[in-house]
Length: 166
Image 1 (tube, helix red, strand yellow):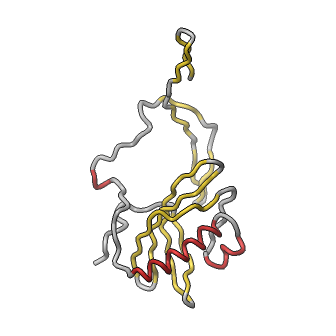
Image 2 (cartoon, rainbow, N blue to C red):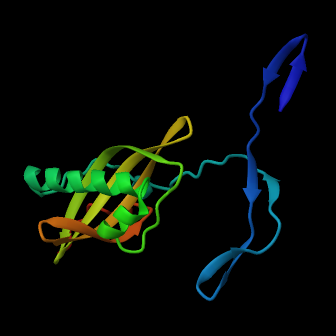
Image 3 (cartoon, rainbow, N blue to C red):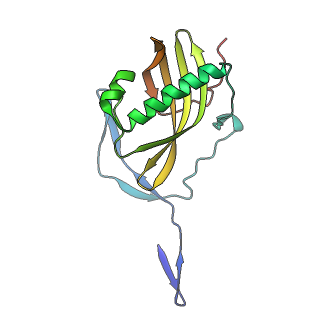
């Protein structure tokens, strides 16, 4: 919203909610009606405690050589995740390419062994258009013939990602 005061233009920020009604049908979600706007006092959710805030600062127990090997694979994976479905199919199961996006960097990696699998907690920067943004991922990797394969991909990092299993 623009406000004009004494021949000066002043910009005022308005926080507005954009609501999209959805429903679940047979385990899938769909839009159930027309979207609408609503007033909001704030769009920032405030965690009720420090325990509810995600911080990417934990250090894992895997070797530097293992990290280099995984980071090299993740660079190949995220490059193909944004460019080439055929190549992505060779290193990942049931994951589709994200079009019009460029992989820029891996910003954080935490690795945890889970039996025969390796759980990779990763924050990645992408470029879309002229802007960059970070995304969080949890990848379940299996190793085969000296390289990795992505069995599962989640677009989130759990708050307790670094908690060691007993």
